[in-house]
Length: 228
Image (cartoon, rainbow, N blue to C red):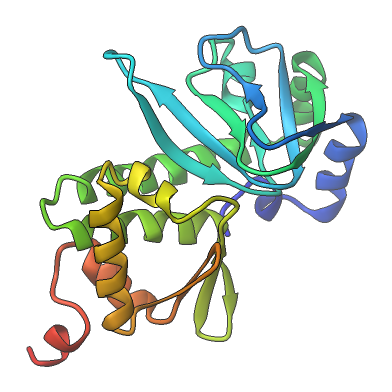
C-alpha cells in the first residue's frame, strides 16, 4: 500500500494524528473543495474518500480512491496554491484536521520534505501509467489499469494475492476508467474468467498480479499469454 503512513515511523505518524482535531464525515460529505484556499490538511484515520477534479468543460473526473493513512490537501498547503481537486467521503470517515501552519511545522520538525517528494513522484508515475492505460481502446486494458492503480493505493498482500477493499460500488471503477458501466462489468468479468481477478462485494482480489499488469499494458494475458 502506498500512502503517507507507510513511509513514516509509527511514532511520527502518531505525532501527526495527535496534533489534529477529530472530525467525522458522513458518506457524501465534502472534505475539500477544488479551488479553495489551502488553510488545512486532513489526516484520514478511518473510511475511504473519492478524489475528483472538474475539467475545463465542467465534467467531474474521478481520479482516485484513498483510504486510512492518507494526508489530504498536503500539496496545496506546502506550495501555497489553491486545491487542485475535491475530496468527498465515499463512506463514513474520521479525519484529524490540522491548520496549514501546524502541518508545515510538523513537516519541518521531522524533516519530511523528502518523504512527501517521494510520495508525490510515485503517484505522478502511477497516474501517468493510468493515463497511458486509458488511451487503450481495449476495455479490458482500461479497467485493468484502474485496478492496478487501486492495488498500489489501497491493496494489501495476503499470501500471493492482493486484496483491495472498496468503500464504493464497483460502478465507480467505470467512472475512473471513463467507461460505461456495462462495458466495465464485461471487462471485469473477462479478468475474472482469466483467473486474474476475483470479485466480491465491495472487494477485489487480485489472484495474479503479473497477469493484471500485462492486461493493463494491452498485452496478452491468461491462457492467451500461456499459449505464446
